[in-house]
Image 1 (cartoon, one colour):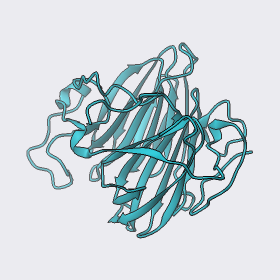
Image 2: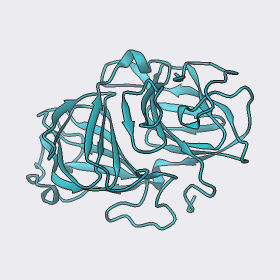
Image 3: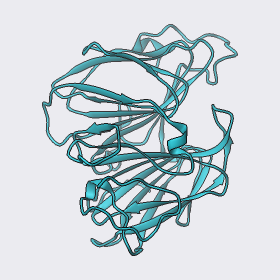
Image 4: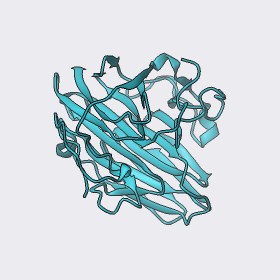
Length: 309
């Protein structure tokens, strides 16, 4: 049966399939390693590299001086750190802030499952499969790049920045047929609870509308001040959490905006639940005060995690 993450639910057991992230009837210890924002590599590339005009000398609608400010969670592009190349099946997590009327010109991808979550603004995607779509806050798009696909990503707004989290996930096998899909954001579904955004194509009972070719789940939540939800981690699973807006406390670890956390079991039977509590909020695009988090859960890989913390 499909499983939904609800606020303050404990002691529930569901299907034995690990890909549905079932709740467990007992609580066990997990290792929570904070990845502070100061450890993320910040990239501000030349606008011409991606087909953009030069940066304006002054534009009151811009929040940064460069067209793009990207925070790399793992080795990518000019950032090469052999001690920080992936977390399990997650190969890339980039936190991108794109200024108005700028974007990424047409470029290729292959053999990656690419999941993009929009934090604020509107992302316009166009690809070689004939897809063209614009998506706003809380929406998810994915591409199975497979044998090869070309696409572009732009912020077409003239006065609002665009922020999104783009994640590259290693597929279960290479050379798959290219594919595209998306899900429009639903604020009510993620309000003080987890919304299941992404699941595996092999998880037939899931309520997630986006399905990828890997045993990896993605969830998001917007929390009011002081609200608590639980993070169930079933046996043999681990998770990567990102604080998008505001601050949350995970176990005894506080994550502020742009911080992340590696959550791994302390033993092979490290299953159970962890509390996530909103401890600071900020006014978001919709005008409400929230703490906003994104979570990826996947098969545990012994030794996973950054080697430079």
